[in-house]
Length: 256
Length: 256
Image (cartoon, rainbow over all chains, first blue to last red):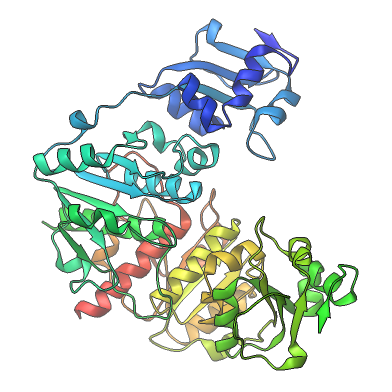
């Protein structure tokens, strides 16, 4: 199929997926760029369409009826970036069951009201690198299928379960039932992170860029630690803090 | 002084500072928001002006002739953000001497062609948190006085020397002369980062988001190590990788 008009219904539908409301109505999202599209195709995610520019010479393992050639100009209309990469996949949102994802000895990340899509995506990328079992977002964290968040994951969205907007009670009940300890970073904590066993069987919770973790979650938190900092900066970027904790967890697993 | 017109010469000059060319012509840059302006005022940086909206009720320790009240609408014209914070400082670029900044036992970061201003700013923030002695940028790294980079530093730009666009020869010669080891991360390195002594007397070099450190710098690199990753992601975000190295360095200093 070749589409040359941006008024084509399919193109209009894909364009709408830039908005969260339409993504959830259709249960679809899109990723852009060769790397992300390849990761999508290798994954177990259901790919609805792959869109490529008409002069694309990338060899793609996609059935004919799902491969759509479009006029170059159309990418500029749909794309979230200033210089679109001329390849895009429309992907079905996966259905995850929180209870199935949580097990003893697992390693989890919980994100509470994280607002910046770049931070969210970067945390997912690090979670993938350090073999986290699942990432859960709660309390109006920015949508994981936001184009900028997806871009920052660098394809990691297809490597581990990321569950959006999980009901708080349900999540912590499932963690508790499996004996998973919920830990947070806290500038006032007594212990340094490297003095705590965070090798496995933990869910690390990180909060909003300005306010940190919501006080209402204190009842679920089993303990806290601090990242040692002896400079003048009061805090670290949330994606940096999360990644340092994941590195430390990985280090502890390896030296055991 | 109260300025109500965006056609005012001073306002026009400040607006131009969004562009790198004018920043370096005037040797000035601006920071926005209460936190950054406060950090600027506490620092040894020379503050040319502080601009606040006419209804501002923040108590500022600024001499009368450097405090300028402006019409709210003007902030929207100058500001780099969609929702300007109604307070801004115009600051003189500091003059750093690379030779004076490098000493034995120091901890340095070198950034080689880092392109994303958010990554640059986040690395400066982490460098501040982990007490790095100086950050040096080389080979067309994005300008540190770029408004988005400055915003990501969260005021840390005023806490440690960040030297822009240092001549490569001069930098590595100064490091060598002081016996500072230049180290890089490398996915193919044999040693894990925690098996190397990176507590002090090192300059850690990080490269471009896609291509990594320029091959031409290999001659200056004394050794490399890898960050352990057992997941599927091929690499980490550069600001995350740099921050993990700085955390590990800090951990080693503390457990010594």
